Every structure is written in C-alpha cells, then in structure tokens.
Image 1 (cartoon, rainbow, N blue to C red):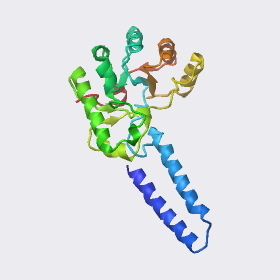
Image 2 (image 1 turned 45 degrees about the vertical axis):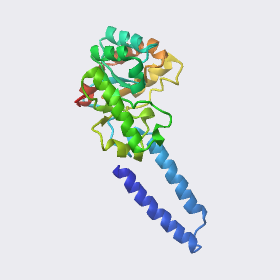
Image 3 (image 1 turned 135 degrees about the vertical axis):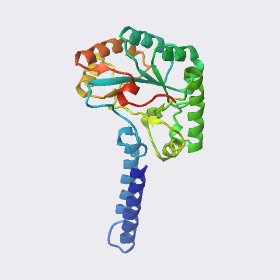
Length: 257
C-alpha cells in the first residue's frame, strides 16, 4: 500500500499549503475544496482498477513471452449454469480457475467437488460477495476469507492461495486484511464485460482485439450467455494461435498450500 501512503502524504502537503494560502488571501477557497474532490476521485478510480496495484499487489497477467492465456470465472458455483460450463470446458479440454464464494460452495458442494475433480482451480472470492463488502472492517473481511478458505479446504483438502476481490475493488481495509493472509491476489488483463455486452460476436471480437500473451480473462458462471459464447470463444482464441492454460501454469504460482 506504499502508493496509497505516498499519495496521502502528498495530498496532505498540498491541502495544508492551499489552506494556508487561502487563510492569507492568496487563493480562493475553491482551490482547497477542489484538491479534496480531485483526490477522492483519484482514490475511487484506483479502487475500481485492480491493475493499478494502488492498494494491493495483484497479478493481472501471466508470462508475456508465451502465447498463452487463462480463463477464470467468478461468483459460482451455481446449479443453473456451472455444470453446463464444465461440460463445455471438458469437451474442449480446457482447465479454468473458478473464484467461488463460500455461500455458493455451501449450497452447491457437489458442483464444487466436480470443479476440483475435473482439474480446475478453486480460488477464494469471499463468503458473501456482499454489495457492502468494501465497507466492511478489516476484521470482518478476514472472517469472510477464513470461512471461505475453510469450506474450500473441505472440498480440495488444501488451503487456497488465489484470491480475487469482489468486483475487483480494492481499498485500505482490504489491504490491511490481506496482510494477515497468504494470498496471491488475482486480477484480470482487461474487462470482458460478459455481463453487459449482449451481442455475442461483438464481445468475442472485442476480446480478440485486446487479448495478448499472458492475458487473464474474467467471466462469470452465473451468466447464461456464456454457455453459448464459451465454445465459440475457445475456438476463436485457439485460431489466433493462443493456448489456454491453467491459471497456476500461466502465472507460475501455487494455487493451494
């Protein structure tokens, strides 16, 4: 979190200086107010951009010397769609990483067991994936992560080392929480917008324009559209000369301990 602390120190210097100058009638009150607004806006921007690594070191791509990529899926497992996605991955001989919530695993243990049995990775994606997770205290965050680790260990026999924050949002509270853990934080190379883009061809074309060596692609297995998109996407990526590798191979890190 060095970048954050440096920015905070610089902001304090600028803000105190502007207040002093205002007090002596050298500048308008608008200046110190504008400094606060700009700084808060920058913090929000970095919070929503995990690749900035502003608060937390995160891996957002793999080995860029090899024409390889990885597929990752968030928020499952779900009985409605995950089994079909697993069928597709199996038929195409692709191994992916599933960043699962603890509550979804609890409701769908058989599917989680299948994910592991078929050679995919399960990573920690918090217990609740609450909309308010980013406002939790560090202690609450640690509790969620520990509970999710516990249920993943019941499935895999090992503690997960890969963690992806909900929505890819990071902040000082999460940074403090992760200091007590031993995770490799996983981001993504670019947003696929799989939950937003409705046109299948448009989405695949966009991915092919942006994909590069070492890309980590992020999708969601609660998204029904992925069932029809996934086979075409896998073929399109391979036709571009990319191999699809397990995440641990792509980033050369252990997924469990």
